[in-house]
Structure formats: C-alpha cells, structure tokens
Amino acid sequence: MELEAKIYVAGHRGLVGSALVKNLKGRGYQNIVTRTHSELDLTNSTAVAEFFAQEKPEYVFLAAAKVGGIVANNTYRAEFIYDNLMIQNNIVHQSYLQGVKKLLFLGSTCIYPKNCPQPMKEEYLLTDTLEYTNEPYAIAKIAGIKLCESYNLQYGTNFISVMPTNLYGPNDNFNLEKSHVLPALIRKVHLGKALENNDWDTIDKDLNRLPIEGVAGDDQMDRKLQILKKYGLVKTEAGKVSVEIWGSGKPKREFLWSEDMADACVFIMENRDFKDTYKNEDIEIRNTHINIGTGIDISIADLAEQIKVHIGFKGVFQYNADKPDGTMVKRTDVTKLNDLGWKHKVDIAQGLHLMYQYYLGS
Image (tube, rainbow, N blue to C red; front, side, top):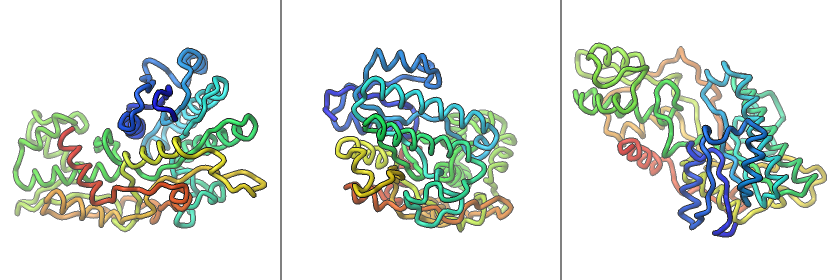
C-alpha cells in the first residue's frame, strides 16, 4: 500500500476497526476514509454503491459486522446471518466493481466446527458441524471467505480473508451484561478489590461511568449491593470478598491483543497477496483464509489468577459449575501466519497490564 493511498476501514469504531485505524495512522497512512452507521448503512446496497462510486477507495479493510454474545447470537439468528451477509456482499461486490486493489476481510475462529481438532488448522474448515448457538454468524463469515475466494478466482481480484482468535484491547466492551470473559473478569476483580477495601468512591465512579442494569454510583446502597451480588460480587460478614466465575474454570482459551491483530492485518495488506495464501500445486484452491492468533492458550482459572495478582485482589473466586463450560479447548494453529512472516508481540501478562491501564483511564 502506498502511504498516500485512499484506504476505507469499514467498522472503524469497534474493537477491531479502531485498532486498524490506529495502526495505519502510526505507519503514516493519512488518507483513511470512515463512515459511521448513521452516515452509511452497509446493509443498503444502493447506499454502498453510491459511497464506493464517490470515494473510490484503493484499499479496503472489512471489519464491519453485527456481533454479540451467545444469547444475542442465538436469539437474533435471522439478523445475524442477514445483516452480515448483506454487509459482506455489498462491500466485496462494490470493491470488485470499483477496482479496489486489495481487500482484507475479517472473520472469526467461530467458523470452525464445534468439535474441531486442536489446534485449529485452516484446513479444518467445513469438516464437521458448527456450534449451534452461533451457527448463523459463522455461516455468514464462511460465506465471506468463499465470496473473496470466488471473486479472486473468477475476476482476478486480490481479496484476502483473516480469522482472528479471541481479541481484547482498547474500545473493548466492559458491560457485565454483554462482555466477554477477559474484560468482564478485569472489571469484576477491580470492583472486588474496591469492595474488600470498602472503597465506595471507586465503586461509585465505576458504576457512574458504566451502570449495570441501570444501577449507577449515586443509587441507594442496597441497590448497589444487590446488583453487585447479582453479578457475583459478595462480601461476607468476615470481610472476605468472593467473585463468581461461570463454569469450572478448566476451559482453555486463546487471547490476542487487538493492536497485535491490527499489526498482523496491515502487515498482510502491505506484504502479501491472495496468491500467497495457498500452494501453487493446489488443484482445488480452498481454505485460503489465515488464522490470526498467538497459538497459545490459558485456562480461565489461570487467567483469573493472573488478573487477581495484577490488580491486587485478595479475595476468592467461586466457580459456578451450574453454568456451562462450553468447548474445553479452542486454540488456533498459526503456522500459516508465522510462515507468511508475522508473529505476535504482546503476551498475556503484558496484555493484561495494558488492558487494566486502559480500563482505569477510559
């Protein structure tokens, strides 16, 4: 990519898109085009066509998507498949029509089968049944991979698909009603430490910044205690604080610092092409997507203990075995990514420090 090239980042406000914009600007790219949802509805084919015809971006990062947790994925199944298919179809097709030089499509490792062999290699795609709760979202992302592959093979475009593992970082979601495990643990342990120290100034500040189910720091004490208890933060008469964690704590997950993910994406856009994602001797060109991750996992229990030590929480964790564990192991094989010339830089210990500092300052 040329430094003066026009680059469109779709989904620039999210965890992924904001990290991409930051990385691009840090490398000297200044001609970056963005649109908010209110400015451009990416599910609207006519609006997207008009945008591409007017702006004519040379490079595209497709990070826009309808995303959510298990409950949202399972409840709004039609919206998750329809919205994501429309977003992808519109942007990829207009990128082809307007002669975009290169496009990077971002998906998720949920594309792999529910009982996928570990670590998950790109070749395991479509080898077994998907996890039911997020099947519509996963199918949409798989369709995005195949869309890019098909346009490349038929039209000679240069569209690349990458599948990041579990991400965390700036602009993450710390809402305990909807957040993923890592940001949720950081916030709960932060509140747990304040509770054991009777530091209600810290608790009130936290709740005022991000109310839980509408409960803020200036609410009555009993309401605050009730909402903290509902989300697993309890102080006994002896002064000991416990923090609840769903499941047994035994499942292992892989986590990638979002700014590392962005660095990998920009590296690929600057240095690699679609032809680099498969072997020249392949008769059938498939599984051209690239896993983006660390290839290293950690149990939820060990993750919680690291957060506890880092924040200085002296209480205990209560594991709620009545809640589901989900898949016990989910780790990506990043051999392809490493062979293409990129390896992660931020390990989990450093990432937790950066994440907590971000939370304190956000």
